[in-house]
Each structure stands twice: as structure tokens, then as C-alpha cells.
Amino acid sequence: AAGGGEVTLVAMAPNNETAGLRTALAMGAAKAILVSDEALSGAGALDTAKALAAAIKRAEPDLVLAATESSDGYTGTVPEQVAALLGLPSITFAKHVEISGETVNVQRQTELGYDEVETSLPALVSVTAGVVEPRYPSFKGIMAAKSKPVDQLTLGDLGIDAGSVGAAGAGPQVVITDYGVLKPEPGSEELQFVARFELTLDAATHAVCRSIPLDDLPAERIWGELEKLLG
Image (cartoon, rainbow, N blue to C red):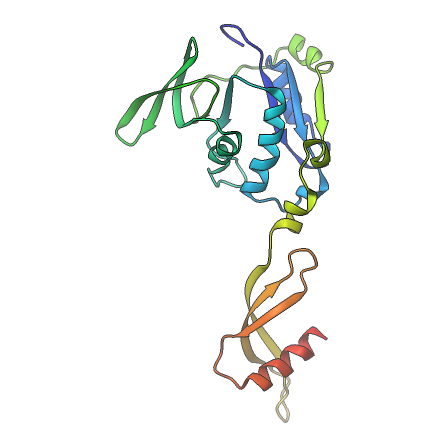
């Protein structure tokens, strides 16, 4: 790292995918930690934060740098959640970051310009696009990256209960669904609308565990049609 220190990458990805980490290692990072576990399928922002926070804690960093948001989830909440889980002070939307002794000084981007903000280390800082000009991997860096360590961890390695994250830990899912039933009139095979339901699905099995009719129809008729649909 410029000015001294060592950079450790921390990421969460399915199927033990390391391509992105290898690229960053080729840019100069010293080592990487990858969290990959099938139980993280369907993980929300808080699940992601829990996994990343546990991995980051193992690295014992002085400064945690994070992007503002991912390019798939776009929640913008994970850095703050990680900071809260680690008990670290955090600064968001940093456009410039400097370290001075045991203090991090940040220019925090605002609609009107930027604020000067500082906090003591260790801390977490989330940065905006363009905070630095990214390095391009050299051939030497690419070759060196192949031998740099990537510590691949599961939820069990991090002491996280697999049943508390991902789809299994998501809790009930509520969806509103239109149900149509084929009720042919004499000489017609038109699909007739029956009712609209608010369904509560079990997070693990997706089985219907509760159904609330949203239309003004007799409950007996709605339940009868629903039972036919679900077989």
C-alpha cells in the first residue's frame, strides 16, 4: 500500500469464485479472504454484512475501505452494517482519504461540495467512484498474484449459524398473487379470474403457510379454489 502497510482483500462470492480477487491481488494487494457458502444463497444486505464483518475481524485491520454499494444489490447499507457489527466508527461517501498517525481524515462528498471529517482508527470508510485512479495489473503482478494466499472460508469457519442467513434465515416471504381458474361457461374455455391472495411462504420450503383473500368473495369459495390450485 502507498505510504506503508499491507492490503488484505475481503469478499463474499458463490462457488469459491476468486477471479475478481486475483485481479485485485495483481494490482498489489498482499492477500485475500473469500467467504463462500451455499447457505448464503439468497443472502440479504444484513446477511452479507454479517459474513464480511466476521471475515474482516480475522484480519484485524487498522482501516477498512469499502465501496458505497455493490453493482448488483445497490442497497448502500452494507458498509454501515459492517461498521456497526464490528463496533467501528464509520464515514461514508469519501472522495479523499488521508491517514495521519492514529486518525483518518476524509473529504465527505455532499450535494454542495464536501465536508471535512475525521475519526480515530480503527475505522471503516466507504468511498465514492473516482476516489482514486485504479492501478492496471502488470504482467509481473498477474504472475505474482497466482501465488498470493486466498483464505477460503465457510460460515462454519466464521462461527455463523447457516440457518440464520440466506434463504433459511430470511423469515416468511409475503407475496400477492392473482389466481385464475379454468371455469368454462357453456361453449367457452375462457380462463376466469377468481381471487387475489396475500400469501405467506415458508422461507426454506416456499410452501404456503398462510393465505389472506384480498377480494370481497365468500371465504369458503376462495379457500375451495385455492385448495384446487395447490393440489
